[in-house]
Length: 391
Image (cartoon, rainbow, N blue to C red; front, top):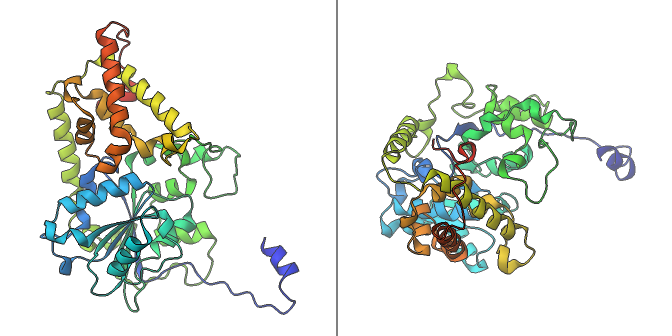
């Protein structure tokens, strides 16, 4: 492409100037969350404690899913007094222009009310957020260039520094880099393991640069420069207090730069404690679980593969409607817990918007499955532990 531009558009006396992609005033960091992005405790560190807007740094969170974005926004609001709810806002393209203009103004002006903004990937380009202290990516986008584009939203004010944090889920460490060496699109650092389809899962869509970023112990600045072919002299320079989280000799404590401590160990321990408690609870019979799971998967496929907007509601990926962890929660829950569609929302801690779209359908699937079980129309077929085992 560049050769074509040089040959057909530029004159013989053109000057080629290449600048670095490095933002020396940013601190780069990665973090693997203990459970999953659906665990709302993951995001508690985004708020100062005790909470007051005047003490809260400006935090911009990018999500790949509008459903998760809304869920996290509601969770963060639940952690602060009602009088401060306006300081935590939702921002995506499905909202009215008037609302977006108001929220943008409140987030970007020096004395604006909004201190935490949850948004989607569509807002990473073309919109200026001049005074952001921390950018958090909940997941890795489809390319390294896009990752850095989003991270570049922080530390824009003159003389400021910023923290750019990328969150990963634990499953990304189960993928081996050699799985990308299949010959498919082999020169692309952002290649997937195989060609994608409309129904490719979140794990299928992960790119090589994401796995490398999560698993490598190399300096993140160096990793990003190599990924973009940035060979400029200042590609790895930094003016912030720290470079990144990959320098053990620096004794860099990520928690010290966040509004609240991570308490990562506490999160992991609480998950283990919860698991032990769950073993004492009453669940759906093991032989009934995989059958219900198959019914849910069948419904998700019908919805996401439909071309009818009244059916798919604009959703084309099953994980955006009902993630694995949520599906697993449903099939393990004892049948008596579901007395109405509202119970589906309560058990999954979902938003009212999600409930209006999907709650009734899921409740109907559960009820019809259980009625057929009672009538002997479905035999116990055994629990597929590989798919739905308790962890």
